[in-house]
Image (cartoon, rainbow, N blue to C red; front, side, top):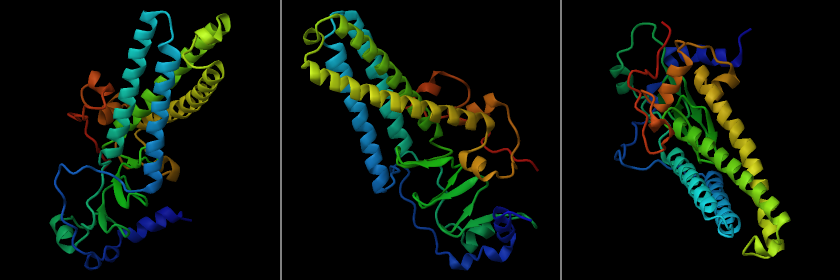
Length: 298
């Protein structure tokens, strides 16, 4: 017995299923410089909360943990490290949120476009009935973005965007840097607790002892929660990249129709070719170079 997914694909193989006459011509595309942004209220709220939580951690680390410290070198080094990682985390978040994840042109399943593909006899093409577009292999429709996304892994409300072919690098960097600043904040908070227990609480902070304790408890709770969440997500994403199988493909257990590459080559496909320090920069757009994004088994 065939699964529903296989039955759906059999239907899509029928030429009549495309029905290009039911598709209106695609809307005119805006300029290439137009910023990608999803107008989803839930995602926008989650994105704002993410930035506010990072700013809260910045406030506690700088004004509660570092400025009252007597060791200037300790404050300077940890302040520079934490603020640098926090800046990279927010920059990665912004790039993941405002980068087109690989959206397929909407409404391109027209008769003219299908004819321009010059399909060979028996060649299979897929049409998304929701956004009326020719769906490339490994693309899936997102109900939030209302578009088909190439190599879609999942839709993340925390970045208010899909994680796909073009922005997965930035999402991975975001989870990595958030995990690092969470771990750093927890270590500094632990040292501060030890210092305050050994000294007078009124001397280890510019705030009152009760306020200092509340600030530290909230910071530790936030840091521990985000450390666990982002570390797990980072590990999941790296595993997905190395195995060259997106989250949706794993969930649906889709048949693998693309060539198997080495784990290192799969990393280059996402982060750029060749390996360089730019892998860690949210400002560097991946250059695939020799790392072909799609290699299919014939």
